[in-house]
Each structure stands twice: as structure tokens, then as C-alpha cells.
Length: 151
Image (tube, helix red, strand yellow):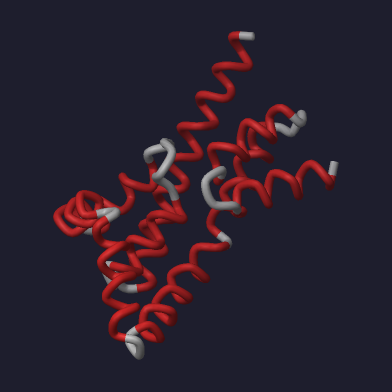
């Protein structure tokens, strides 16, 4: 049982898979929905403070190399212009909604990267991302339980 719990926790902490992979995995491994939800929530939130703090350190370090900083900044913002505008327009609510949408390319990792590029404050960004993860977890759990009930 401990092996299955670790698999869910680690899956939730990985980029791309996050909750979208961890919750179906936990249910497929026979864990309860409550246990799967809690492990997925914890696993998905664990890397976020490190991303928020780490990216600001990387961005500040890159400032020492102006050409590289300009290129990374341009690529980071160009890849998410619409996202950045929406988060700036909607503020913390925009970040919550973005993270809560359980689609590829959204989620805690991308939300944390966007918050870092937009230089959002650490605690409000962490809280917004955590709320978004909780909502996404509820949505995915509901879908997972619905599919299991259907089968």
C-alpha cells in the first residue's frame, strides 16, 4: 500500500502529469478517493514554493548576462502572452482559474512559472496556485469517480 501512495504522490509532483495523472493512477491502484485526493493535492503543491523561489533566483542570475536574459524573457513572455495578460487583468483570481482548469498546459507548474515571470508576490501566488490545485483536484476526482461508477 505504501508503494502505491508514493507513486501517486510522485506523479502529482511531476510536471505535465500533475493531478491529471495522479488521481486516475491512485483510483486505478485501488486507493480510496479521499486518500488519492489528499496525496495528489500534497504532491502537486510540494514543488510550487521551490519553483516560485527558484525561478526568481534564476531570473536575477540571468540579468548578469543581458543577451541571454533578454532571450529567455522574450521566450517566456511570448509563449504566454495571452496567459500573462489574463492573469494581469484578473489578478490572483486569474491565476486560480488558470491552475484550476484541468487541461494540458495548465496547472500548478505552469502557474508558478507564470507567477515568477510576472513577478507576483510569493505568498499570494502560492495561495492562489494552491486554491487552483484544490479546485482542479475536485474536478478530476469527480470525473474519476464518475467514470468508475459508469464502468
